[in-house]
Image 1 (cartoon, rainbow, N blue to C red):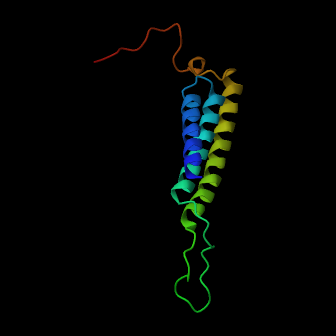
Image 2: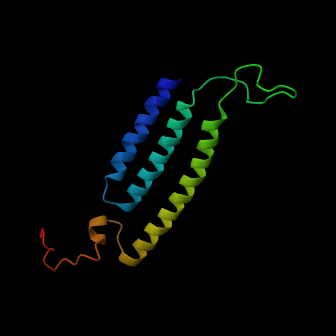
Length: 125
């Protein structure tokens, strides 16, 4: 099962890097969403995929009697999902607002601070 997940993680990272190198903002946002899902899956896979019992300690015992699942990767993934969703929503609103103001989602055309008819700034000192 883990080799299949490693292949899936590789596909997520490959597709996300391809999308992040695009010139359209919406493709960059999809790349960010894919890379966050890839990282979540990487953390989940690094936490060892085993069929263990839940980490519940019986009353009166100090440690579990049998091997239990590691709850830390699961907690990290739940937190990362919430953070990545809010970050994606913020970037989506920010890119939509930029599209409203500039009328394009192509990053080379979004250079408002660098007018086309002006000479380029000096290259050195």
